[in-house]
Length: 348
Image (cartoon, rainbow, N blue to C red):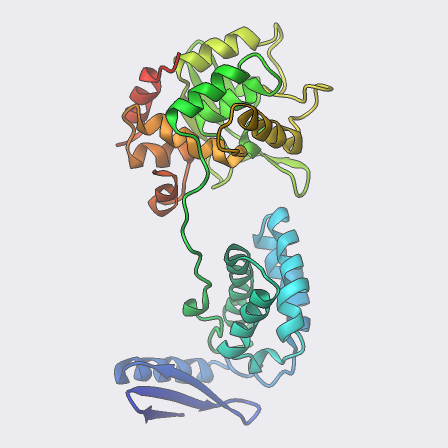
């Protein structure tokens, strides 16, 4: 092993079991010494004995996908992982030996995606997949000493304001659709800020109209066509229902309140995402409003709550976001304040 100074940086070098040198850069001498100490310890434990394997990225992906991915990932996400590898990762680095992949090789994945016209958001999803793969190659499989998918390679996404309706426009839409096809769905999503997957899986048993409370327990996953017994974030959450929505739900509640709250107008089955999303756009077009879709309604819900006194923490609670950085995208206290806001919302 050796520590070599290169300009203002340092390199930690170690000869692997295959006779080739492994190199990792460090910004300070102290950091280099820590890496060197860790490598020496791992080498004494036999950590690097498998580095001489000539397993390719394609071979490793199949092994990883069948084991680690199968145990830790949701079925819908696994489907996307397979697609990302097939379309973007494998064609660039699939034939490379795992131990030879460099950060520059990883960067080429995103260069090629850019040439194909793929959006930064898609590139970030691919980044998450390939970083997870190589992270497990280090931690679980011990094929590598460090992850070549560096954090600085994560594609940046330009921030832009999501399409949504202002409060007056939202009132206009809600008044227009109240007694129309998909009207109840639009009211529910607006007043409760629901994801469309949560709206589709919402059952009458999740709603207590006497107490004015709703509990978000499930989500419908379109990719796999199943109802998952927990919403996004894996945490069930309850909220107060604004009075105007309570009155609407009491009016449309069937005598035997069972099954889904909103269903297909054509047959009573699950609310069809495609036609529901299309209907929202058509209503907006007719009213000469910005043509938003289902996610635009969720963003519009933030306008509804903010204008009635909600703060950032209230919105995070309402939308069940994992962190405030996600909530920031919806902004153009705690649950007690959110409950207060829900009780004062009046549009009509």
